[in-house]
Length: 300
Image 1 (spheres, one colour):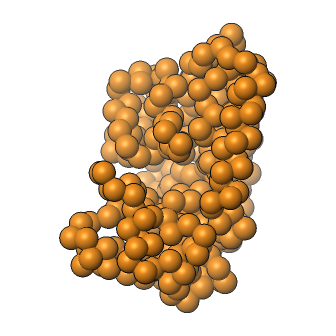
Image 2 (cartoon, rainbow, N blue to C red; image 1 turned 30 degrees about the horizontal axis):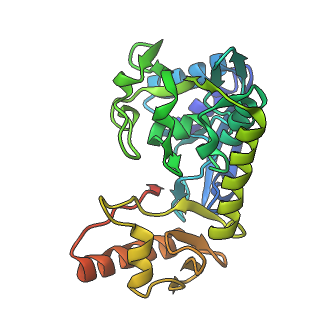
C-alpha cells in the first residue's frame, strides 16, 4: 500500500517519467538484476520534488546515473530507483564547464575538447555520468575527477535546500568522496580546465580510447574495474599471478583480457558475481596476505 501511495504522489510531479516493473538489467552496465520501479526526472525541479516525496514518506530509494558501478540483487530492488540520465544540461563558459549530474562523461569530455579545454582527457571512455564520477572520484590514466572540480551543487534532503560544496568540502580521496557518507545528493558540478591545443587534446583522447579497446573487455557487460588499487600494488597483476584470469562462476568470469575486470560472459546472476568477488578476495588474502576491496556497489 505504501508503494502505491508513493507512486500516486510521484505521478503528480511534472517532468518525471515513472516505469514500474522495470528490469534492473536495463539500468546498469553489468546487465544483471531483478525488477524495480524506476523514475526518470528530466529537470532539477522534478528531481528535487521526487526526492522530497520519497524522504517525506520514508521510502526506500537509491539515486543512480548510468549504473556503471552498480550491481542489483537477483530479487530486484523493493524501493524506488531514481535515474538521473535525463538531467544532462551542460554549459561551457570560458574555461569552465557546468554540468548536471546525468551528463555522460564522454559528453563532458567531448564538450571540453571542442572548446579547446584540457584536463578531462583521462575520463574519456569511462562509462559513467558526472554524478557518479563525483560520488566515487572516478579516475583513470593518472587523472581523477577531483583534479578539475571547482565545486559541487547538491541537494540536502534534510533541509530541502540546494547547496554548493567546495572541492575541499567534498573530501576527495582515492575512489571516495564525502557524498558516500553525508547524505547529500549530487545535482551537478562545475569544472575548471586549462586552455590547450584542440588537436592535441583530441589526439590524447583517441589514444586513451585506443588503450581501453586494446586492454579492456569492452565487448562484454561489466562494471569496469572490479577492485580498488591496493597501495603500492597493481590488483589486476596480483589476480593474474594468482592464476585467476579466466576463472568463472556461473556466467560471471574474470576477464581473460584484463584480470581487473569481472565480466557478464553469459547470463550471469548477482549471486555468480558476488561469489566470484569473494573467491578472488579469499585467494589474494591467502596468497598475498592482504585484503583487496571491491569497487562494485551491491544494491539489495
